Length: 528
Ligand code: SF4
Ligand code: SF4
Image (cartoon, rainbow, N blue to C red; front, side):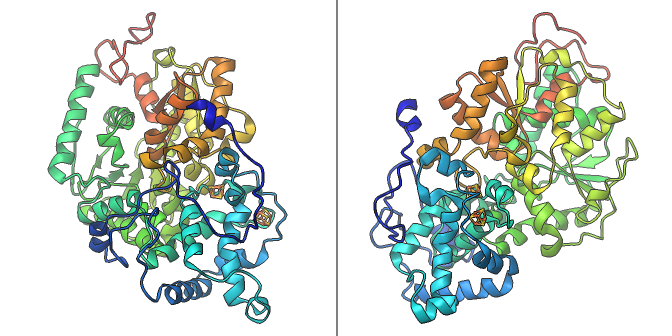
């Protein structure tokens, strides 16, 4: 299948860009949300439909709903209004989107994606639109076009790094999706996890007893590898720290090995902490739905911190959880001043950057431990791995978490290699499947969107023999293995704390024969 996808047709189409007609071809769109999930969340217009249907069964007053919704949001979000008005069409963002690079479709240029909504704004909310007919008339075809392209944007914000005016097309996509939600045009891969999160607390709807079983199973496995039984505090009132992770860490692979890494670390440093069966999800698919939904889902983490009486919160390897925390938490649910400013109980470091959210990223926490020499590592246990680091979009661009994961990897691995400069750190390329676009039915578009990332991995694979792609996002861990299998076979995906856990020498451990995956250690390394 590589051959057809590498043929990217970047020839501009012959027709006028104003023509909204799109073709919902198999492999490049996501299925609609099932009505039971839409109903459960109290969202608009639950019904059975698919994007390939000619009749989308929109409410009879759909046009008014969209225009009223647009008006409200122009009033409420000054940044959105600004983004609608100030684009000079300079084109600096045009070739920065992975979906454009991988598909060649001009409407996947960020400037064009924004224009799809801006043209309607111009028509109905500016004098030149009202008096002279500038912009585009809102039609059902435009709704279909919005659905197609706003669900071909992973809200990664790479384009915004290059815009001289700081226009954030991800924010425009978010508003576009909010508007679509008002008339019931949403996708199942977003809405079902949101509904599950509401009902049970996590994306897959894993019940508290299953959460506990899963954690016990992980502790059993870790004991087999290390001979050490780690503690499993769940819902423990009065712990110093609440630890929140994405639910994939305890039900999916390769995420699961990251969980073993956290468990090893917390045991080794004697952290006074608790997991929670209620806040059993750090991820927040509300971010891909609406501001309101983001707020509702984020609230549970803080409610649980309050109920358990912890001092502060530690968060695991997740992407959009951190975007919510760093960019929206304060105005949505915060400030969390009922908690204390986080201080590492091991090093005494005060995490002033978390003064307001009271939540520290696990990479900040661990990098600080390493900086203070608090962990004994045997990096040679990772010598069979040549590692590169994929900066996950949200920790990199939304919170500037660039050095901490690299510091951990340099301590834990002897063979660490960077991908080319314009593909990492703030300029990192998206996995191509974020923001809810990771379902199987969307596979062709995922592989196309992930092509620039894969291309950079291929470069270090060929130059340095890189065979491991480390990352700190649950969506990356779920979707990059497929991307690697397709574009760069032989490269596996790992969490940063998995690699740390491999190298961590635990007090009283038996001689290690395997890494956290149960694979034999490199031949010459059986003991630290
Ligand atoms: S936010 Fe990311 S996916 Fe969306 S237009 Fe910008 S670069 Fe493309
Ligand atoms: S870089 Fe900014 S101003 Fe230039 S076309 Fe893109 S969004 Fe518009």
